[in-house]
Length: 441
Image 1 (cartoon, rainbow, N blue to C red):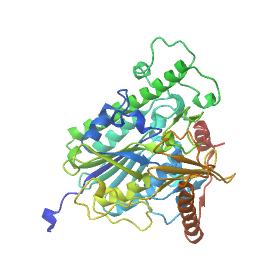
Image 2 (image 1 turned 30 degrees about the vertical axis):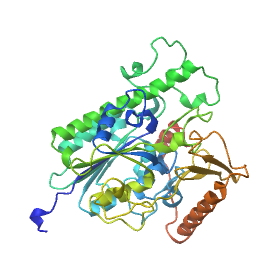
Image 3 (image 1 turned 90 degrees about the vertical axis):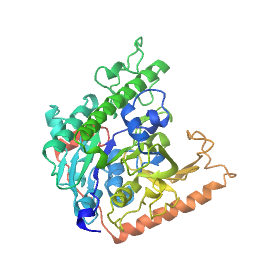
Image 4 (image 1 turned 135 degrees about the vertical axis):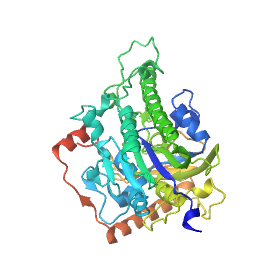
């Protein structure tokens, strides 16, 4: 094929939305109109029904997307460790393939200090906070999704080089607690007659406190308001792409780092469990004329599959580092690759150390400190209420345990012979920001 007939490589936009549960989006069956823009994109592309995050809080989850590695291997997990030298990232591989790379982010747990900037020509992780007057960065009660879109649009219009395809990563924060959306979103899904004391603030202090059903519904309504606010900002970004004649040749990926718990297991927030309310996230891929619309993939996939999928779609090689696999064959019959059904894994090292293995029908969770397990039949107990680990008749336990122990062994061998963890020193300002989000202590 001559240079004149070579297809133009697509632009790529990766949107990650903090703390977004898939079951709170209309395209996943939710009862409220929280996500008309994302629903429309899903209808024009492919939606994954069982996309599982690699972690239940931001740093390891996003780094797993960027590296196609579990957090046991990329090791950016505890707020004082960064991506080891020598490991590649999605941005680095795209840059090597000729892409201009940029990121607009607003969560200090995706700070460049942890290695998230690797491969990016521009990694803007502070302009939005400064523009919003958030010097001390209390992101809890400040809405910034509109500013994220403004900066992304500004980059599209004034900073990108038109002679090169671009990869733009956009990180929206607002569904994260506290749930304090701006007007009119604060009243969009809440009861106007509610007279209780819950205004969506100080969510992490509600752990273990008795709340009425009306209180809980108020909090859920405010969370949904934050989703709708962010969805409207995503619509503004997509409208800009359309008006600039960029949408047709742009590969658009929308996903989330993790979900949030709303008392399903007697808690709130995230980071402390590996139940599905934290791990099951949206995944939508859209590329006009290249992806057949209205597709739904029901196979279980992991977000570590994201990097090889994007590279495969744009015709770039997949590095041997990747533990995930391309998903392209699940929605494009022309793909030369074959998707292999296999278990997915998730971990958390934030407030407690947990690891789990999940198949489409079963899940096993280990509490690392106590060396104890929980096991669930996901077909008959999708809300993970009945622990089967101690039931001798549960035949699936040993098979899950064997696969899980093999995964841990392979990870340990990798770490012993490859890249050691890179310890970093956190400056006082960043540490203050991290503590404000409830992870660092």
